[in-house]
Length: 224
Image 1 (cartoon, rainbow, N blue to C red):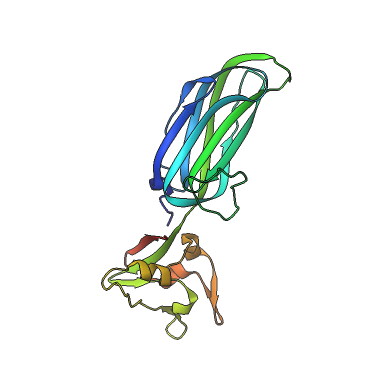
Image 2: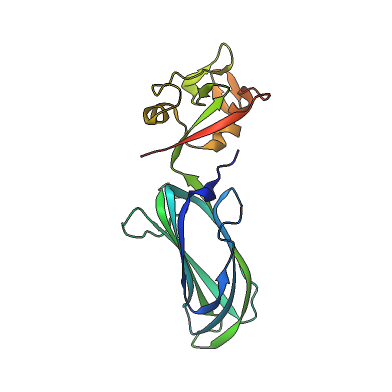
């Protein structure tokens, strides 16, 4: 049950550097990534650390980066690449080393630079094949499950070890959960649904404790 992370994108800004070309498919339907795009460029440069482009991604909900996957380009111009990833919260300072540091950001900056492998100020001009960049992570949100008319959490405190299933929640919000319900009952990571948990002497996957013959819905509340 993947989160549609790419629905979390508020805006994308492409700042062109020393290249002619385009960035296509900024949201390509990969539901597991914040953003996924191929880059197809013609690069003209001289010397080291020639700036190619920067992409600035603003998210609706703060985002924690767990990995970045970059498919290096095949090129015919003898250059190497340096990729820079930074993040910031609101209008704060940009921070480096943001992959797997446990922090959530609502603005992410990805930059690519090129260096001439021979060093010095060698000139190069040529075509770069498609380079694919994917950024993965988790949104800052709390999740609840709904089956039939009942809401559930997968926190161990709400597991009934006599009936061997999760207890329906009594919501303070009434029919639908409110902010207080998400803060009290919500769990952070949807991946926990398919990971083993142990309550007492029983080990199980939470997803297996729900009725497979009925639809199971995920409700998400943004943590403020």
